[in-house]
Length: 150
Image (cartoon, rainbow, N blue to C red; front, side, top):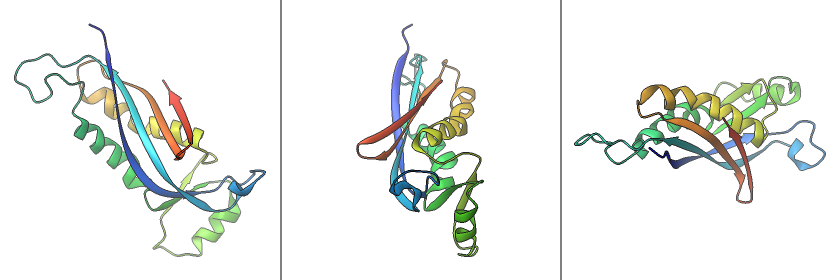
């Protein structure tokens, strides 16, 4: 059987900074990120089941993306653990501020890899029709995308 490919995305409002950047991205700022999962697998052929004719229900993908990405970084600031200046500034905002500390500089490229790692097991282990997370695409701006592929 020839595998099919589908995509589903969610969006978040998330802040970050690239501390060593040569231009304005070194300043704290935010984006309307789009997190898009690309999934490949066999179409379900079992008659009468809810997912018949699908790889996976789009709403199931949305639930995974929401739980493992959206609910983690939406209306939060993602900061590199080595960015002491940003971490100090953010900690002064108190406990009401959502800060997500990561082990990498939060560029679109690194966030695409991070997002892939957050959901890969959820996609591949939950369904029996050879589902595979092919790529995670992250749109930082309407004309700037990064992808991480398996």
